[in-house]
Length: 410
Length: 186
Image 1 (cartoon, each protein chain N blue to C red):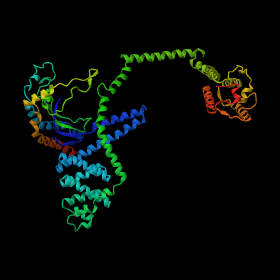
Image 2: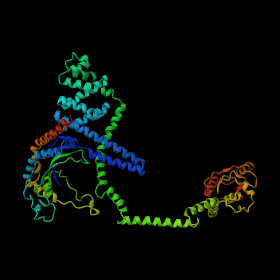
Image 3: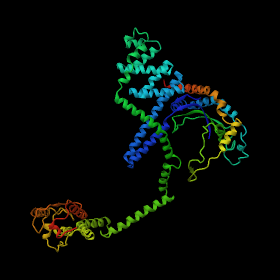
Image 4: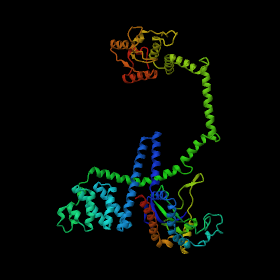
């Protein structure tokens, strides 16, 4: 603990900017690792608010310094002046950062905060009422306040005979700035002021967050040290990492040896052989899987027959004869099932019993009996989906069609 | 009290170094020289012996908060700091620091609001865990005793009147060196 007696202070917001930058980095990290878009947007908003607050603090500090030095402003009058700027900004839709330089200029001329405020109001009214250049009006007003009305009369010749040019000008354009304020700018300005106020709250939190992240023993240091340890085989994490690497290498070696058995010692050739055989066997394996699933879940016999037919219709295993169903094949043509895919879509394949496609057979059968078709589009070769679709049909219609229920019932 | 705020000191120091090595050192030396009388006034205002018996080193041999423990009780240093702060945009450029902990405690004792203390503190981190402790009346007793002996709040009163003068003089020094840079740039 120390007692600090300040003699002279300095303004330097680079530390705060660094904190903001750090927060920006955090924001990018959040986006990078895919943590919610909402959080990123929040970080964006807070970062903007902190920036606005930092800029506003700088501009206020500058104005306060000038008013203290040139217009003898006290602490209380500075606070009042800040409120005046905010309120004027809200009424006219002009950003507070644009108002402060003019006020500082008037403070320098008038040596009084209240007189400077009055001149600023007149300037805004005149500019809004006439559309003349803001800088020119400000210069003319400043000169007129000091007693030199030449510029002002040059701009407004009607003031030539006026006894109090400033008062007459103020009366002429009174309230123009507020009346002519652009509502959109007013809205923008209000949002800007709110943002600055939010930023005032956020700035210290930002600073704390960055300090917390970067402090000795904080997240950055801890995680950084962990990575350092990983790359050092003398540390515990380093040893473990090395063991993992070795284990992966060993496992890969064993897998390599395994495939080499199928390729006359060449692992890649062996892998190719195994893979191509697996691909060839895939439809049969899928059909087999379907049969097993159906059998184990006790689903419809009809689906089982469909699966068998799929295999029978086209032999998928080279040199293996097609599987022939033992039941009456005529039942199959009655089956109102289209496009079931055990090993592929069979809806367009020829039904050997009718000479038509399965799809056409099913449609004809349904038409002949005045029944509704159950259309199942299942391209994923998943028998469960077929059963589910049938289930849905039963739920909607009460039961399966009569010509099916003879063989198939849920 | 220090009201003046200087802008872009870092830029000035960078330009000074570029202009002539050693100029920055000269500027700091001049600024610190102005603060020397203030530092010595503070030094004189600090009690030479512990204001309360409990602060005596012989009554508090192992504590780090005995009068003059670790650092002499009248340790005062003048610092010229251009470094940034993450918390505040406005920070002291030239300041006089009273660095002895017990001296600082004695000086600031009783300057707070003296609001009614809670009976138990809020939870805080302690040795890999969290804890809270009872609030005793020790602090209040210390403040009352220091006040009764007029042994608190001695730093500021000793220098208050000379602060504004020192501030303007240091500002003049900074301005002088800034003008050197500007002349060279023009």
